[in-house]
Amino acid sequence: TVDNWNFLVAFPRVRMEAFKPNTIRSGFAISGLVPLDPHPVLQNLNIQVEGPTKAPTLPGSLQGYSDFQNTPYNSQQLQRKERSIKKIINQCCLHIERIYTGREWRLPLP
Image (cartoon, rainbow, N blue to C red; front, side):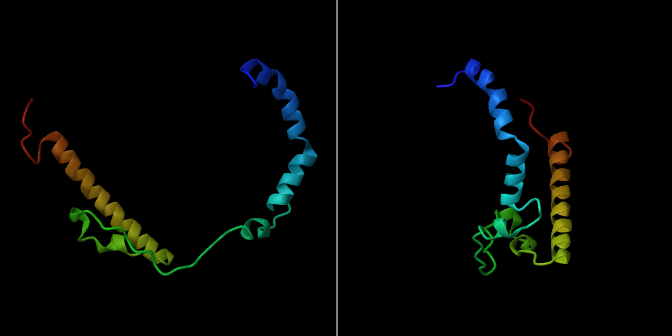
């Protein structure tokens, strides 16, 4: 086994061996980084295109927000969904703030 001391002693030598310029260039070439070639990465992807995914069941308080249940397919739909989610988050934050400060309900004192 390698304890801390042996690791610290061996590390500089192993580092110099692993990070030689040729080793780095070879790693970049194999991964398609330099020269740029996305094919090595893309050929290993296992992409299966299916129909739209079914949205999980939402808690009762969110059932009215049908916006959550549709996957956006373009940038406009994504931006619309983003605005909708931000609006809901802001409303939730407002309610939490009101509850926290006791403005919405009288909170019982311990």
